[in-house]
Length: 62
Image 1 (cartoon, helix red, strand yellow):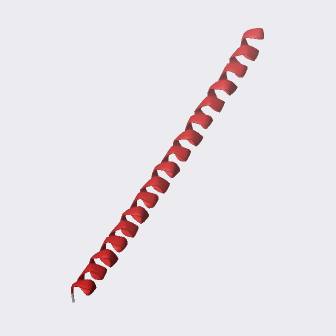
Image 2: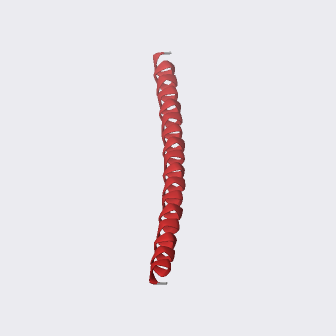
């Protein structure tokens, strides 16, 4: 009977480990998506800044 208790505990630990790995993968995917959004926003800001700078230089030449 003791073996069944041990196997049951092992099974619960195993299920818990899989559940945690699932949560870790979800968190990693969310982090990847957020970094991609931040990178895109930063690139858009740099593009906007570069365009404004080029427009200022063009205005000064006139």
